[in-house]
Amino acid sequence: MEGNGFRDRIQDFSSRNAVIVGVSCDSPAENRAFRDKFSFPFDLLCDEDRSVSMRYGAAESEDQQYPKRISYLIDPEGRIARVYAKVVPAEHPDEVLAALDELG
Image 1 (cartoon, rainbow, N blue to C red):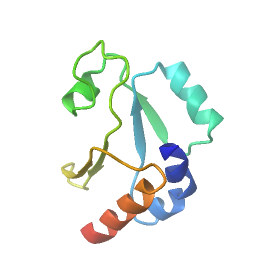
Image 2 (image 1 turned 90 degrees about the vertical axis):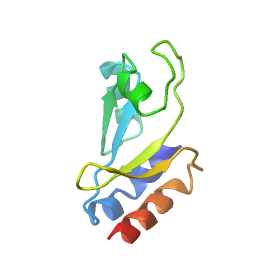
Image 3 (image 1 turned 180 degrees about the vertical axis):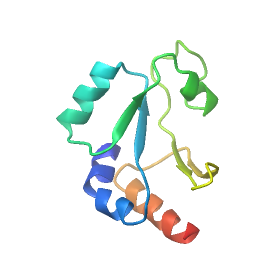
């Protein structure tokens, strides 16, 4: 699972001053239970109305049951530096770490 890779490498992200945040269309209680089950050291934000998912291209409508999994690397200025429309979960944390190193 993608989240586990970020969990397992959280110190590598922290040492680069990167903050990991997940976004899910689940309820706060469901997100809390999921985060706790997998011991994620990062927040899972709730997008129950799918407004964020639609704005960032993960959902096409507010009734889409399963939005796409997309990752965004946002720079310190709040700009999107990279978009990862398709990822291989086992490789994605390393891919993002390499991008962080490139961005310096």
